[in-house]
Every structure is written in C-alpha cells, then in structure tokens.
Amino acid sequence: MSSTIEFDEAAARVLEAAYLTTDVVEQRCAVLRSLGLEPGQHVLDIGCGPGLLVRDLAGSVGEGGRGCGLDLSDAMLGMARRRCADQAWVSFDQGDAMKLPYEDAAFDAVVSTQVYEYVADIPGALAEIRRVLRPGGRVAILDTDYGSLVVHTDDEPRLARILDAWDEHFVHRDLPRFLGPALREAGFRLRQRSAIPMFNPEYQPNAFSFHLTMFIAGFSGGRRDATQEDAQGWLAELQDLGRQGRYFFSLNRYLFVADRG
Ligand SMILES: C[S@@+](CC[C@H](N)C(=O)[O-])C[C@H]1O[C@@H](n2cnc3c(N)ncnc32)[C@H](O)[C@@H]1O
Image (cartoon, rainbow, N blue to C red; front, side, top):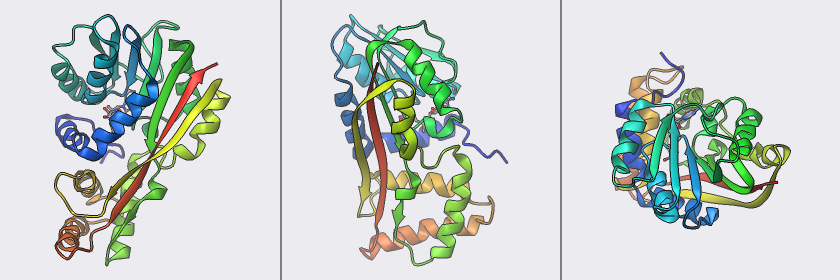
C-alpha cells in the first residue's frame, strides 16, 4: 500500500469537487488578490492540479501575458489542459517542484497551493522558485496545518486512529509553522501572512469538509490501526451529527506572500 496519495483520475475528480466548493473558491480569490497581477505579466502555478487557479491567473494577466501550470500528475494535467483550452496564452508542463523546467527570472509571480506539504526539501524547492522569479517578483504559497483541525466526534479513539493513518500521506503535516522563516532564509521579503479557515459548522454536501472527510476516510480505512469499519462508521457519524445539528468542522490553511529580494 502506497504511503502517499496517488493523484490519479479518481483522486483528481474528488479533489476537483472539493475545490469547486465556496470555501475553496474564496481561498482562490484571496490568493489571486495577494499576487496583485497586472495585464501582460508571466505567472507560474506549481502543482497546479485541475487548473482552477491557472484559469483565474490567466484571466488576470490576459492574452498579452503568460500563464504556466506545472504538475507531476498526468491525470491532473489532462483536467487542467481541458479547463484552459480556450486560453491560448496558457501552457502546462509535467515536472517536479524540485527542478522547475523554466529559465532563470522567467516569471513575475509564482504561486503554489497545497503542494509543499508533499515536498521533502523545502529550502531546495524555495531556491528553485527564487531562481525562476525576476528580481522583485512575488511568490504566494498556501498550505494546511493539520494541527489546527477540530472535528466534533462522540468516538475520539476512532477519530484518532483515522487521523493517525491520514498523517502517513504528508511529508509535512504542519508546514505553515516554519514556512515564514524558510522564506526569509531563502532570500524573500515577507509581505503577508494570513489564516484562511475552512469552517463548516453544518453538514452540507456543497461544503469543503464533506469532500475532505470522504477523502480522508478513503485513504485511512485499512491503514495503520484504522479499519474500513472505522472509516465508514466515522462518515456515518458525521452525517448523524449533521442531522442532529451537532456537526462541527474547522481547519486552517495559511497563505504566505513574499517578494524576491
Ligand atoms: C492537493 S493537490 C493541489 C492542487 C492545486 N494546487 C490546488 O490547490 O487546487 C496537490 C497537487 O500537487 C501535485 N504535486 C505533488 N508533489 C509535486 C511535486 N513535487 N512537483 C509538482 N507537483 C506536485 C500533485 O500531483 C497534485 O496535483
């Protein structure tokens, strides 16, 4: 059993549904605002996934600009290419955040959301971003700190087993805690640090937590001490809590924006 998430067709569809929820649409708006893009600029999204943010970035820089998306996964790139097919100034490349296939100082802005939790060598990855940014260019990185997760349950031991298994899929479960210093050490000037809460106090199929908890259950069931029954029982409990008006889910993502010194 792989200890990482396979970003295949099935995962791409589940993630796309989560990323189309209002919670994540608002997050994308905050990320876009933080970059302060202007028409004609060149922008790169590292680990672009299904291409939702690339589409927005490309809209901001316009057809006189350049929008690039990079990802390791074929399935994600397929979805992203289809999404941006009518934007001729957008291109996608398969590649690794550790070795960006772009020239030095090629971009005015670089962005990456929910990717560096999977990347072991953060100083190496930030050095690559710095290399492809022009002097004064801007980077925005957003990631989750799973230490901020609050989910109501009447069965704490079962939830602990499920989350312990979920932890297996990250390299970093708490990257935001050290991202600020890492950016400074890599030669960036920090401009903004913001918390972006994914707060769902109701059980709703169109909310972020509905999709994330299904994804967590799918990954964790049958892994470490979490059984398939644990995973299915937890999902059923969340639904019951929703019916009873006792559902509560909160998880913070953190946005760091910095300029290349
Ligand atoms: C959780 S998804 C986030 C997708 C997108 N950034 C978003 O927020 O909508 C993580 C994405 O990062 C990609 N990824 C993971 N490690 C990577 C690496 N080392 N280099 C490039 N892409 C990577 C995965 O294939 C996947 O598409």
